[in-house]
Amino acid sequence: MSGVNYVTKATLELMKDELTQLKTKGRAEIARAISEAREKGDLKENAEYDAAKEAQGLHEAKIAVLENAIATARVVEADEIDTSKVSILCKVTITNVANKKTITYQLVSEKEADLKLGKISVTSPIGKGLLGKKVGEEADVVAPNGKFRFKIDHITV
Image (cartoon, rainbow, N blue to C red; front, side, top):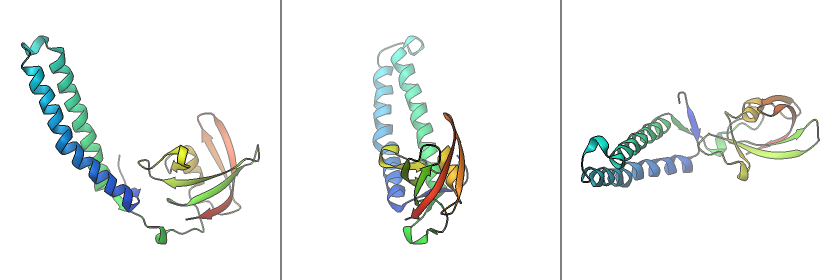
């Protein structure tokens, strides 16, 4: 992951808390699992030891990704958002031109995306297609399940 990672202040705090958890309790649990597996005998034929070492590698990779996300994070506050065009943290109401269905999404960072809550990532196909558009404009979106055209109806914070 490179570039700037736009997040809310609350999300940045959650990321920092998760990193602390991974570095303390998470590492301790993995060290304990490795120690227990080491006590079970020959390390060359010890599947539990191999699994624990693999889990350690995955855990450290997750820490590295989270550290990078925090290092590249830029906190965006609601009062900084320009609602004249679609940008991160905007709530945008769009209408599918083909079937006339209207839906509202909030564009957020990948870390905050949750479709059930109506939050889509700015890096998703729809998010990319909507960025920079103004009310009344149409956005062509190429998604895995086809091509769509959306009309921008309303932009708020």
